[in-house]
Image 1 (cartoon, rainbow, N blue to C red):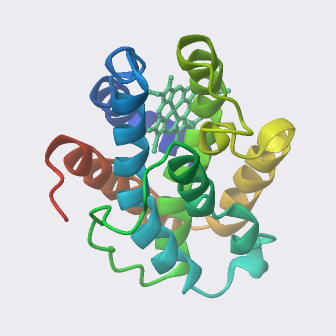
Image 2: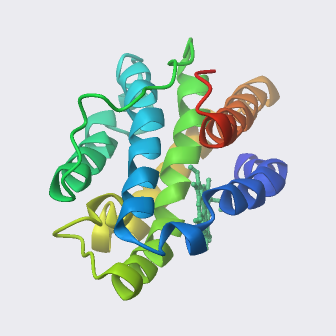
Length: 189
Ligand code: HEM
């Protein structure tokens, strides 16, 4: 089913992205960590804007407004003294359907799971907390589990045909690839 297929087909990309993020290096000091937040902001902002413009989320029980995380990144950057004004932004992908939107959201929603681990590491290494500097990685806080469960339920509700499944899986894979390229090179697409 869709959930297993997503996890299996993107496992290698997840591992690559984790290596790319290279938390060990990013947590050596506040500068490197703030640079990482800036790179995330540059990727999330245009993508979330494109996702917000898609309609139909309510047909699978979702509300996109509850899931935007760009504002968390902006508040972390501001708290750490970095303006968001000149942060380079990635090009937004075309998101032509609800299925494509859900596939891209899978990547951003899944990142909240890893965020719990990252949040603990950030606190230990740099002393930043969900109140200051680690709002993004804390994301939904105590609601990470229920938000993930609800998102998975929406995927199942949507992907009732092989075509719909494929639409989601292709968009998820493309999103992982784009994020990896963005972090590696700052390339817009
Ligand atoms: C370097 C930091 C990261 C760490 C330590 C990490 C760790 C994890 C962990 C532990 C899980 C499984 C949680 C669970 O099953 O309860 C997970 C799942 C996931 N992560 Fe990450 N992750 C990181 C970065 C990312 C990034 C940057 C993204 C994408 C933007 C991402 C996307 C996902 C997705 C989509 C899942 C869900 C897989 C599934 O069950 O279908 N992760 N991550």
